Image 1 (cartoon, rainbow, N blue to C red):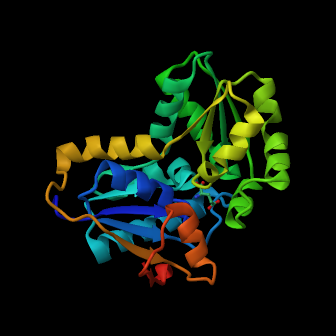
Image 2: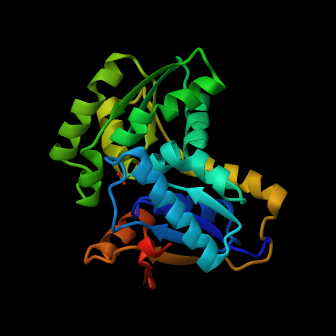
Length: 267
Ligand code: DGL
């Protein structure tokens, strides 16, 4: 079992930031990444669709790669589909919500946390719930930022446009006095510099990638960590567009040499 790879999936390529964190934490593990590039964005879709997509992807990862565990790198999928996946599949399935909530609870000093994410993630209430489960006394202000994903996809990570959008979205959170901003979306870590400029030096910005990798490590200690493997990642996507290379480079910080396109509706 421990020689099998770990599956990681996202609605697109944003989840590659989680791949990077997992590679740092567990360098010997073989990873398989699936990016649902044909069906992105997930953030604007309803729960039934998100659950249906997630099931297809986990079925694919099990059938094709016999993964020993799955990390749901997408926040929207983690928010809506985790429960259904855990019920249906008999392997460890981890999301990014709980690790992200933990990181935010650890970071806050004044007990006021801001959470930003897609419409789906914010509407689900999953982050405030997870934070309050850890510490009921904390105040959480959540806000959907639907323009951030297209901004990042277009490579507009900084400059007047990104700053204007960030200022508009963060206004109510800053007004509420948050000292911690939790990035509840795969794409937002790329906007970190802009978000930090807009929110000022008193606000700590946290994302879930590193904490998710640590939580995966703890989970695998029970089920078997790979100690003598050579690592490596196999990449699959559901659509291969002209922009793939540029976007993969943006999220991963290096080029992807080989990627296979899968017709995910078959699973
Ligand atoms: N991966 C999604 C998330 O983390 C963002 C992109 C999308 O809307 O699909 O919520």
